[in-house]
Image 1: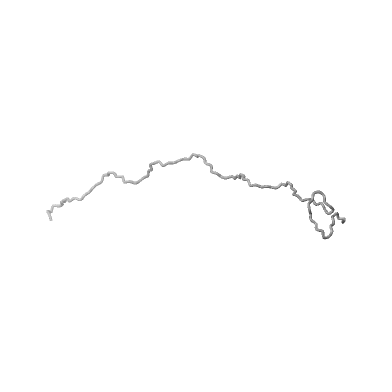
Image 2: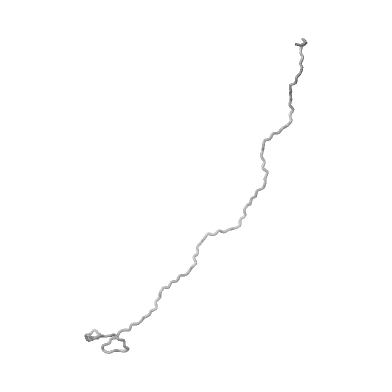
Length: 109
């Protein structure tokens, strides 16, 4: 046996690892049994959610206002025009007439 704490087996010996409950013989060694070890860990889990997003928008706002309403009415439109104005005035009217005029006494020609 060596000073390293292990077991020495002679050359040419074939060994197989066999699980046995309890202890074994001089050629056995203790090996920790492997098993599943579980721990609780925190992990981030994300989901998509809908949220409301608001914006300021311009909207038309209407109100009633008073306004003047006009309509066409007939009116008299006057203008100055030139016109001929006649009146009776006294005038002298002459005409040519044949008259016999006698002169001297020599008795004819």
